[in-house]
Amino acid sequence: MSAPATVLPSLAADVRDGLTRSGLKELAPKYFYDARGSELFDQITSQPEYYPTPCERAILNRHAPHIVAGAHELVELGSGLASKTRALLYAMAGTGGLRRYVPFDCDPWVVERCAEELTELYPGLEVNGVVGDFQTDLDAIPRGERRVVALLGGTIGNLYPGERADFLHAVRRLLADGDRFVLGTDLVKDVAVLEAAYNDAAGVTAEFNLNVLHVLNRELGADFDVDAFAHVAFFDRDSSWVEMRLRARGEQRVSIPGAGIEVELADGEEIRTEISSKFTLQALHRELAEAGMGIEHFYTDPDGLFGLSVAVPQ
Ligand code: SAH
Ligand code: TRP
Image 1: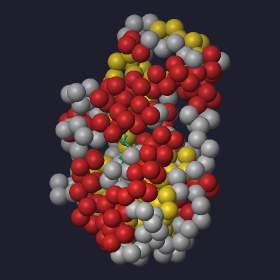
Image 2 (image 1 turned 90 degrees about the vertical axis):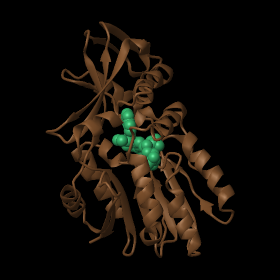
Image 3 (image 1 turned 90 degrees about the horizontal axis):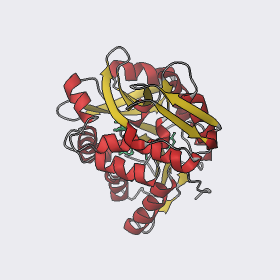
């Protein structure tokens, strides 16, 4: 495995940039995922309101043999704990094609855990974990053949449209003829359903959102009073995304020595911590085509809540 760092090296510069803006302050969602963040995300996926995971799992369980037919390796970007991925590996093992799994994540803890568990499950499998940022480090992925590259969980929706286009072009460059890109995306639907998924009654998403402040306190020596912030999530119809924010309860003055800044927040001021874009099949066709890929198959769950595209280079 490549050298694990606790957090991505871009943290201090991104925090400085995002929190010193004159408009809406912002923190990038990739910094949610330290070991605790990854564990909280895992808990989100079993909340009753969070439909994306069971929907995507159902699609993968049902169509895995077709999705991975003929592939020898699976490269999974933002693998997390890879709980749904097992259907794909199982299908590959079933045809005798499974050679290598490359879990790629910015959180070293999940990459290590994945590598351990999967090596145990499939003794002949080569697990080649990579710790990195899929927005900048895709060239750290070892070369391979007959590959499926996957990004599940709707994670692509956490990138802004411009970042998404850059990312899709970079993925396209990874693909040789015969390779495939498997992309899980959440779909546009009823606002109440969308908003409930990011406001679970048990408050796990709120805790996950607040965790980014713990990361800043630990990694940059910041002194955020985490209890003085509230979780906010709402659907923005114009942008077609759910937006997650942290709202200051009372005026805050925060020092962030690791980023060399002091930040003042007014009472009620918000920091945007994440967007989660919701797609239509038409938008997916367009964005993938712009990056040189065509959708070969598009699967949804029976209720049409979540979509899984299988795209090929064009
Ligand atoms: N694939 C899993 C986890 C999704 S959560 C699922 O579908 O349930 C998103 C995952 O992507 C997290 O594990 C997070 O650590 C990782 N991630 C987010 N931004 C990243 C980035 N820029 N580079 C690498 N990994 C990233
Ligand atoms: N990729 C997931 C999504 O957009 C990540 C996620 C789920 C998330 N719930 C969250 C990120 C809450 C931040 C806060 O659905």
